[in-house]
Image 1 (cartoon, rainbow, N blue to C red):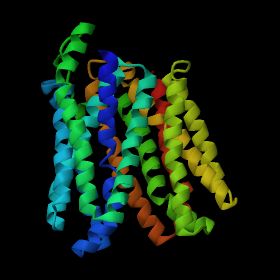
Image 2: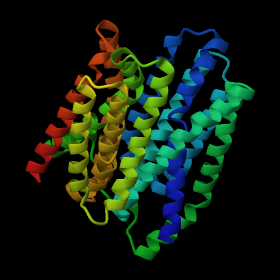
Image 3: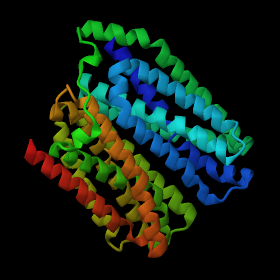
Image 4: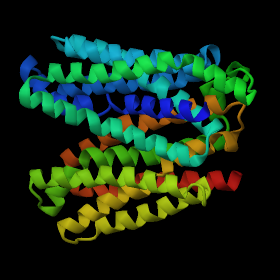
Length: 384
């Protein structure tokens, strides 16, 4: 039963990844058709991120009230409905309106499933779980590209909607499975855990230090993904086409790092895997900073992804051990909210830097977030 439920969770995480990269792939066609300024994409993405942050902060209360299974089913259904809404939107107003439920649903799924896997499964499953997220992130742009080549961005959203609807139906049908697994383990109801508010949590030094790790890791990951191609064009004189192809290796590096971390999780602790990843990440940043040929910078980007990739899932898996099972759901929500704040703000800030100075400063900017991550890790380890 537990294995079957894990498969359902893996598939649900594919559904979590599906919407994340879809809008960016569709936006050039959307703003052309609707006659919108290209910069207006920020309104949609910020609403999605804002909804995700809000639902992450509220997730502990909702999950403790209704249970992980119900929240997963409702949130996945909410994201499916939002994707259908995008497909029929005829103006910027409707795109913004449907961005809200998309963000709200994503944050609840992320927090609920991460905490459940951290509590009930080994670290190897947490790493593989985030590999399945990578499948979803990779799948939706591919489907959108097919739609754009033969139809329109609307058909791409509808195609992805059917995928998400199937996943939502699976999460609904699996509701009895969650109860059977809980009874087989003789676990208490999930509502027995204690809910702690975000401000109370942030008064704890350990929580602030853990959040600093997530802020550094996620800010670095998202900034590198968004601005890596521009860096290769401006600092390494690559063509836009070659740079776009090269940045694919960065995402492959993330998936590879998490897959390898999952294989090694049975032999090495989560803390050790984080340390190894951080060591690889530092070497990769140095490699990108050095004035070497463009292909070497591409290898550096791959290693940035491979080194940073294991940090996020292994930090999540350590949450119940670090803070206790009683409040792990609340701490998980705080960590996810801070992660999304980093995802929201870090690339936007570097965009201003790139416009005012140069995108060639990218590796130095990433070093700042690496320093924040390492400071949080060092202080958290001292407090343990």
